[in-house]
Amino acid sequence: MPQTTEITNVNVGEINHSTVNITGSQRTKQIIYQMDANFEDIQEAPQEAPPEYEIGIAHDIFLSYAHRDGATMRRIASKLRSAGMRVWTDEALEPGTPSWVKAIEEAIRAATVVAVVLTPNARQSEFANKEILTAQAFSTPIVPLLCKGDERFVVPLTLRGVQWLDCRSEGKYRKSLRRLIVHVRKLQENAAD
Image 1 (tube, one colour):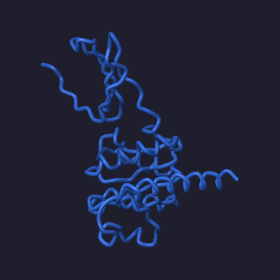
Image 2 (cartoon, helix red, strand yellow; image 1 turned 30 degrees about the vertical axis):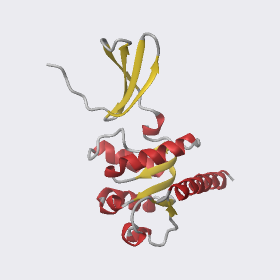
Image 3 (tube, rainbow, N blue to C red; image 1 turned 90 degrees about the vertical axis):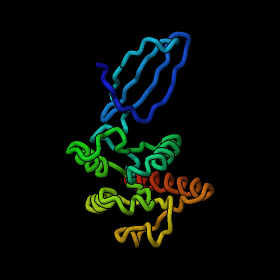
Image 4 (spheres, helix red, strand yellow; image 1 turned 60 degrees about the vertical axis):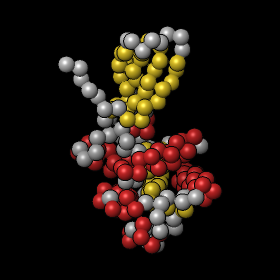
């Protein structure tokens, strides 16, 4: 009986005359599937997870988000990565496992900034709020990104006194992400002095 594997974040790349590489992530590893050009022969070619999933290395930005807001998080992460930021997310890990919790704690501690994707879903997420408290416990700077909803109902009590960046419209989104990048770089410059 064939084994079924759930793949997320699928990207088709490297299409040439003989093979097609399809990259996806499964739990804690990135997997590349190679197919022949006729899509008849499929081979799994496991590879190490990309550096943003590794535990213990420094990251510019830890992205905290509700899993229901995965598309929003991926859009933000992609934009930040294209600007040269090292972004950590938990999307390659299996939620709820002890290794997931440990990886999140270590990534928050290793991050320059925790950027919190604020939405109505995040407001209801117990774990997103725990990530905020963990960042506060480690004195990791927090930058809230208001992505959806009314700030009166979306910004949690623990972030009421923190300046947030408005990402609710396209123009504000681009400006806010630029401000986030500048803020991270200034923090890193100050730490290097």
